[in-house]
Length: 306
Image (cartoon, rainbow, N blue to C red; front, side):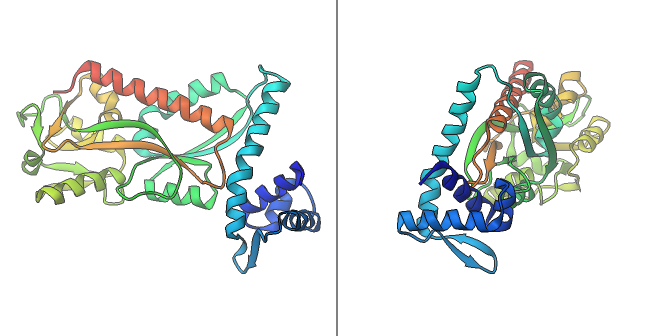
């Protein structure tokens, strides 16, 4: 076998279609199919089954991908480093982020990343964790920054930040909340929470269910900026990660109260398709974004939460 055959195999495995794989490798379909057939003959194993849904890897194909993909990735990175250790990182990445992350640190992260890696094109969008994960599976996103769900995911994940969610009021609120605030005390407050499609709401609802507590949810709003504006000028209360309303907290317009018994926490993770390992540019973007998330959380922690 040779590296060209391995490249064709990886492309067909990831694309699931000889047409797309051939286009990706810039060859005609018969040439790609011939190389795959030669590789199967050499290995003595069938690597793909042709179905109405496309080329589906066999169990031997799954094993071959797990073994071959890291080899090609390491060779590519080694080549880049050998050619020039100062060579610029380039390429294009497509990333999706949950709104609470996009609102809080995306702008700073993009600015920092563009300064350090000006030859990388970035396409960024926001959405719900569930829809972003499906986009990663479908291949329209290279990776996504989402809230970790209760169920174990089949996608590879990178831990980025564990963060407490806090009760947020206006600075002039008359609720006179205790510090820290017991979770059951939230039932007495007029709440604005994200909708049930939002991963943050799922965290809150699960705790309320476990504690057998009925929350008084008056408004459901997913747009973080809208929630912050409503809370600033009223007696409404919300429950969000502190970084999502960091601007209002830093300006002194909002006040955050810790929640205990139990604590409300969320985990931010990066997920990607196992068939498409993160590129060098993608890994660097995740590093920059993680640094911005940690810095934002530290600043708010230093300012103090009631």
